[in-house]
Amino acid sequence: MPKFKAIYYPRLDGDVPPFYAHAVEELTTGGLATKYGILPADVLKIEANSTNIPVVLQASNDAAVAAKEATSVKNEDFATSKFDLLNVFTAINRSPLLDEADAVALGMRQGHTPPDPTSAQPVISKVTSLHNKIIIDWVKGAWNGVNVYASYDNITFEKLDKDNRSPFEDKRLNKVAHVPEKRYYKLCYFDTTGEEIGLMSLVSMVITDIYAV
Image 1 (cartoon, helix red, strand yellow):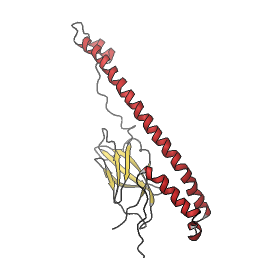
Image 2 (cartoon, rainbow, N blue to C red):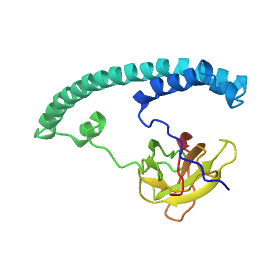
Image 3 (cartoon, rainbow, N blue to C red):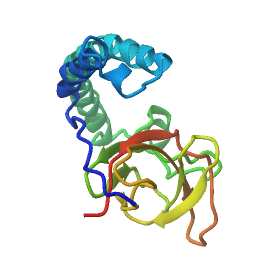
């Protein structure tokens, strides 16, 4: 089998639009799609992608800025609100007239409510694609760990491994050397007996470029 050179693709979101637009220009105006027999339908898809990528990137950036500003306002309001109410609760808590029934009614006293295993659902907080592995960050919560399921088509999933401590690392090589592939991941919590509980996480997709050196 011939050994193919590695294919480059930008890892930073901001580098993708100009890279993509240049590739489309070379394939279309430059005639490389015709030279290498690329199907017209495939060319149309990447032309549409090239138009769409800057739009969704800008929308994402705008949403991130708005979210950051909204979060800052929310954090300040929540901190002030907490301070004000705790001042009132402290005055009541230190009062010689304190009736515990009143404290319970106010919500100052709370019993521990154990988490519900039937509704437990893992959250994949971040997926990072590197040249030698995929890193999956997940939220452990109150549970023992997660089973990791993987798929190449988002239809058929197979159990890949289990993980007791975030992040999980997938170091499998691509099925075909120097051919990027899509991978899909989802997680399910398990308890101290190893029994799966609750709901599957939402599916996360990533493009992988992991090849033998």
